[in-house]
Image (cartoon, rainbow, N blue to C red; front, side, top):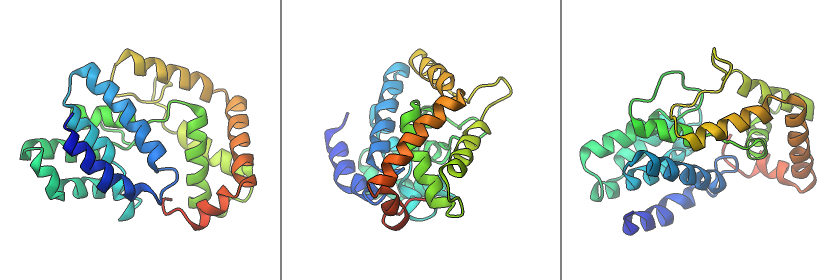
Length: 220
């Protein structure tokens, strides 16, 4: 991919995620890894794929509830990107970022939105536990115990199950189909999932991370 574009994103965009925990660089790098696999499989533009993965949560600094729309605006208004992409590609990327949320019921408007949405998923229960616990600790201060936090987190994911009894996946790349199958097998075993979440909760409670999530990190 274009190394000048990559350097710009690394130096100007990535630092903006430093104050985020569940949406920090660990998450962004995972989304980039996923999307580059899908871009290779579907023979898509790697510069576009890398860019949308890098920008997809940047709107959190403006508004959490509609962060995907704010992220789209930031991408669309970034004058530097216009050095590397024409107007049509910018439009496609803006729509992809706007359509990436996992809770979205309608199919994204283009293939880049589909691969971004699928790349944004946490296919490992241990990774999801880190992000969900942080989000629920920050969003729901009225939840005081681990059990309360876990039930809120678990039910949130279970509400995404479709009529076929599965979590939604827009793409049909065999690697990702298998990732989702394995994730469902693990996550739907509630006792197994609870134990993973409990261990992570105990870790962040003992090392001071919970206090940082509440009082330092900005994402919620």
